[in-house]
Image: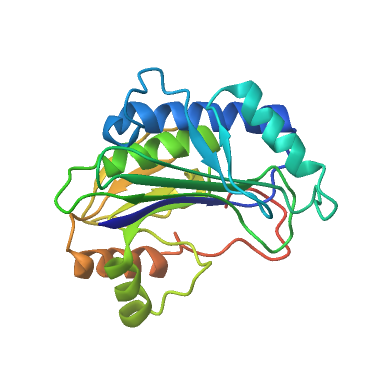
Length: 240
């Protein structure tokens, strides 16, 4: 089964050192929550991951802060890199049979139109139990996003077909995260379990697997209440 755990935010300039720390803590959190996804024999959570390069072969990248900082600095040394766009890094690894994790981020920049992001794509055996809400919560803690979601292909198809969702719009899936400004607009009576992983923000457990209709209904209520309004363009802030 394929699912995505995503977080998005607006402009937030940060040095490579700060990004490396966020990356390290995020990878540690993923390893702790998904031991099946770690490579066989990895008891420390420090690697190996494989870095996908823009050109050339993949390279091995340990999940330690020094190695991550080095990879970010290499990305920033590329001829086409811009501090406005942000710094991209893309990793993957294979764990127990049927488990594959892909993570990518574009962060640290100050774009006016393109959201910054952290995206985790997780492939698992059918029926495997995955702590989806905890994964989104861990990502929200480290990247302080404007909004985030846990979705799969069926959920995203239903949102596009039945609710008019467009890629790039704020969205929730089976689980959603909303920053404090958005959390203040969540309507009374929304059917979802609420948690607060960050001061002011809210994590919404909306539906289980296969309940796309419930996700669509919650998305429409949140959108109509203004909790899923896009950031104003050109963007001048990281969160609503």
